[in-house]
Length: 392
Image (cartoon, rainbow, N blue to C red; front, top):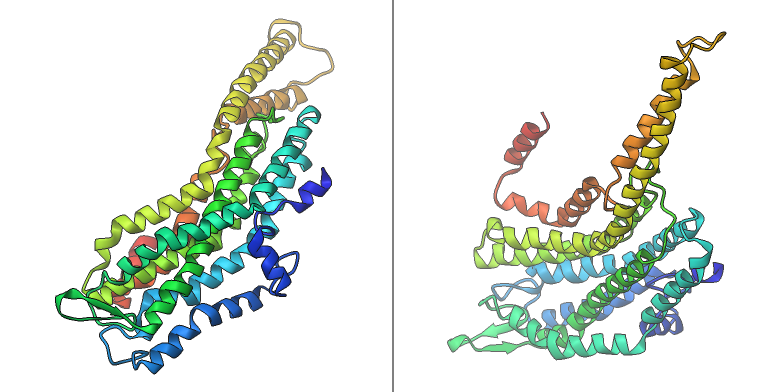
């Protein structure tokens, strides 16, 4: 049991992980993260720069030279490193969340084998060779046509391709490297994170079906499950990385196609909503358990309250006042107040193990990379004035 708990990590496994270990680009605990970032950037970005320079399209010569392609720069120089750093973040934080189920005595003894089996199942899915092969097949079979379509969406001469009469496009060598190497690597990393979201959701679904020893009067307001809200901190780098991709896509269309930021309000809101759902959505699986715990707690604490209130009434109201005991400051009064507070906690048990603040914080953090684009609509002085009005 202890070994499974210590080994639980959704990122330290799988064929790519083993390949990186053999290439001395990773340790068994996801060390050497900077080395991985440097190697990947040299693979996916540097050839694009060199080929663009050789083609005379690196910083001038076309409507959208390579160094002014905001989407590509942000995707490969910011988002990709963040996805790599996120692996170390999740590797360090997620096992702590899983251990909380055992450390907090939430798993009854007779359910330990099922909990252990859920961990083992998650690790098998993480290590699946067919899963990563399917991701690669998806990238080259479906993702690649989408790359061509997306790059040709802007009808401008760029480092990627030349536009001739009849809207015909001729890809450059840099464009071909982008399509066949750079973007497939990036798409594979993104899809692998979505796959990890799926494994984590599946694991939580299995745990939610166990008879967890939840306590309705737990002070965290979620019967002892609020620690799961820290999932947002584990995945924050992933969300910021995908928010950065969105920012680059919007920036290209603003600066090279004459669009405005407000035209993308649906995409902005949708990206934040989808990523928040990926992170916190699986926690809704605990709603039936929390509802049952609250209902049971109200019945049990209601019965306890009835018993205590009756004894208190018999002692201090109807019966003769106890000799030698002063009512003022008596422990019975404090106990009655404490029981009232406990019942209030039970009645207020939330049906999801997170709060609105957790959701809002993750959504705002995800969209931080989009914030600089506000300067395309307002000057710095206008933005400061609006912030001052909001704050004061």
